[in-house]
Image (cartoon, rainbow, N blue to C red; front, top):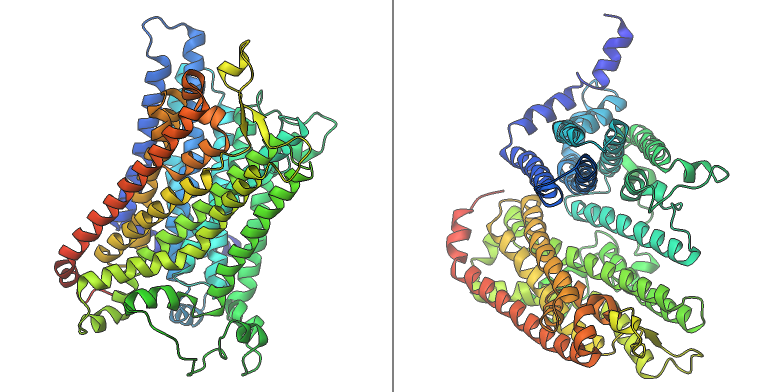
Length: 615
């Protein structure tokens, strides 16, 4: 065999690192369960879609082709979503395991080149993701029997999903090679992926709303969901005319080329830094004294053995969870940067509406995306820190020391819950403060704004000959209802994370389990609340408060969120039902938190003894 072929094979299929990762991953039951669940979800969605759209007694060829096309669109979007969710799971090992300095010390003593080390990690972990894509190909081929689905669209959707997986994988490998990431960076990686997708979709919606052009934007070429939408919905999301720029005329090709180009640049950077010790060696640590920015936050020099004394709460566990997470400069900076940027964004939105830069619909859309995006980030942070609260102490041996003290299981778990919620409250003040500031603005009549703060509701009653229904840009009671539901909901996320952290062997498994359970439960409750609020009078308005997301949406856009209630009974009755529903939702979340906490306290000794010695 020519030497060039042996070199290429050693970079990819015959790479020792890739072979090791594939062999070890193939033996893990968790990977098998993930692959089985992935295919099961696609099959169930496909069958449900075909039965709903094509289950009529009399069905012509046209209706059959339409049912096949709609089913293909549903599973194509679902596949991209699952790839974006599952890819960080498979790539998490690259961040948590390969980021260990000892692992790199062993790798760097081998005769493998820098390119072989980097590409071996990438190909070995991408193998499982790409295998999922190929495994689902028969499902997409099955849809072609119904007609209406060209083969070109199927392969283009696979190309979009594959490029998204490659991009996520290269980012994870870059984080591992840089030595700047550890196990705690896994969830930051997750949050970054979700936040990026949400922000780009929100900007795309804002650009199209303000310009009046329903077509693709520059956000389309940097978001896989928008690129897939341009491919599958050309009528409602058209591409630019032939006179437009190339990226707007070919958004799918632009996304694929762009993601592969970014991946190539990241791989080049990783190859360059892998034998230099990562970015830590390149940046270096200059000086032994404490820099000014650490002194500003009351921190000493990095690695110093002394720190200023602090006042401890009555429950030391609660104090430790609330205060110790602010013990490093990076954590303090990240937390207060989120608070400062969120406050500035909320004030900027109100200023833009007050000055006329945003009209009412633009302001409502921006407010919904901003507040819900911030709440989603806080919920993910709550799940992350709670899911590692106990399992991290089990791994480093701290839990064994705590069990020798007079601290009881009840005070230990109560302290964890109280301390984590106290740590999250300043972050919750950002979205809740934005809603409170908007409520004050509404109650003050817009501070003399020229057109006031009232908007017409787009409901059926307003469309008839009856006088148009008017409502403020946001129901002012949102300032009270949102905290009433959101704080118990975040507490619910924390207690779910604590439960998984208590019974899981490692931090990675506890985080993944907590996010999965909380995500499924929140998604089901949110979808039911959203559908009930729009279609069921009165009771639906109360049910829409079961989820913080649907509650906030109903307070900002009641005309669409509480349509049937407003049409039949009016806006005042809908607002009363929303208040009652909020009180019921807060009581339900509080009862769940109490029940889960009591169950953890009861089974604490048994669970801890069962996992004793697990690292």
